[in-house]
Image (cartoon, rainbow, N blue to C red; front, top):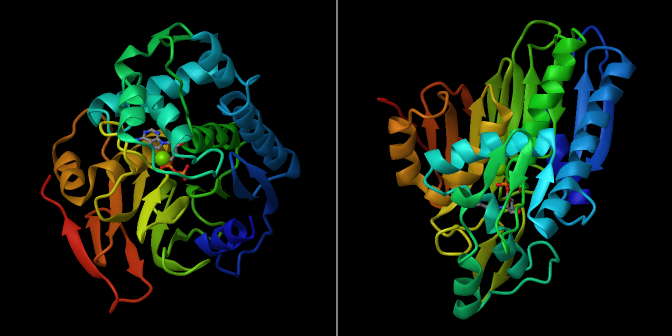
Length: 332
Ligand code: ADP
Ligand code: MG
């Protein structure tokens, strides 16, 4: 948690000189550390925190009494939020041809990414578990969600993004014009800073705890980052990270170190950061140029050779220009 805290503190750069002080709340949630800075009243900031905690209680797949826990045990649940988050997630599953698939959960468990008792599963186990990975079998109908026997879902790849959307809506309802919400790697930059300038959000540097390799300038946008340095184990000199390729059941292994997505929609940001991580640099680029299912988005993809792929709409500042080679992605 200490590491998360330092990561978090480094990832949001609040420039000094703001005339008002924000209401700031920090708490642990969704297996990470969150910090809200809201230029509004305390009650509003607390309402946002409570909303995020409420969603965590619904979505926690490791908690049998949560709504997702119930769904995984019985194959059915009726819940407006589980329905909504899955409705959005399934659009990304379809659009990315299953690079995102919340039903990969039994494999995430088998690899030990939940228990932290890490190991590489054998081929027979992977093949058996892969038989139940198939987002097309998730059925949604008026707040009701149905999944087949032996399927289990995990909303870990999308929950923080959905929570960011709900938090933003709550702030708008309470007429808050300025806030920065760091939901552990998913950051909502609401409006502008009180002095009217853009928010500056740091993108974590995988090579240095607490540091960042770049900052992005944001005005009323959400940025979500998935990184191979967040949760992983090493065996025989090889790194296995917590994002799996749902087609193979293996840990994504294509040279991607981190992917950040910037857009207006937190759920899509979070879902796409995971999906593009699975695709790898080349497929991600082709997908970005051709996809028409989802609203346009920007991305920053760092690979293990030091290349930083950046789409045209990103205002990016590298902290060390010598260390990285920027590859501009454009021509939609
Ligand atoms: P983080 O939660 O660390 O910010 P992500 O948003 O990328 O990172 O979500 C990763 C989590 O989602 C994993 O911990 C796992 O529970 C789950 N997951 C892993 N691979 C996939 C995948 N291909 N599709 C959907 N969920 C996944
Ligand atoms: Mg994600």
